[in-house]
Image (cartoon, rainbow, N blue to C red; front, side):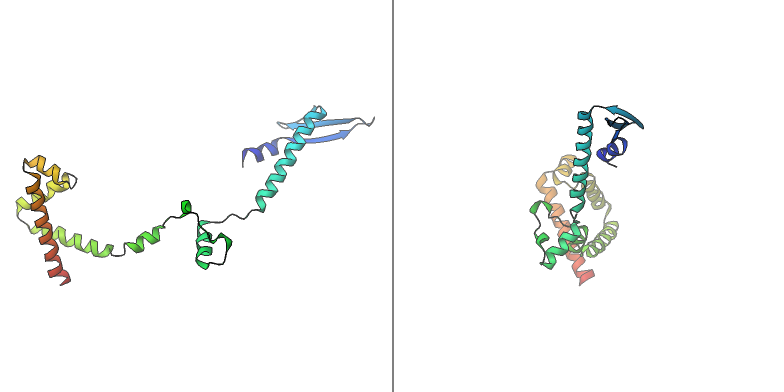
Length: 172
């Protein structure tokens, strides 16, 4: 419940005439009726009417979901078909469909891990060092005290060889 709605349920107003015909104005505050001046009563009355009018106006609006906007856009028969650039975003489904070749990548990675296990220990250690250094040729070069060019050439040749073997052996 919003603050205003909560306030509306807590503060009510009413007016009554006594036996002599004199009007008395009351406002309900914290479950008690308090007699107030006419001006104060009118402020509460105007505020309550304004809130009621605002509530009616807001409830007249149709709130659209992002999916409804997309459906309308694709149907191309609605005024809500225009999607501002700020609202245009890609869904998880779209990203998933874009990367539908993921299964091929997973297959390659599984093959690659198995091939690394078959490599000589020095190559395995070098690949593990590459992984531990955040896949950075510069970091590997600094740790091994080798030139960056040598490290880069080694990994490029190794990865080119691995990709070539994968395409020849698996995809073939």
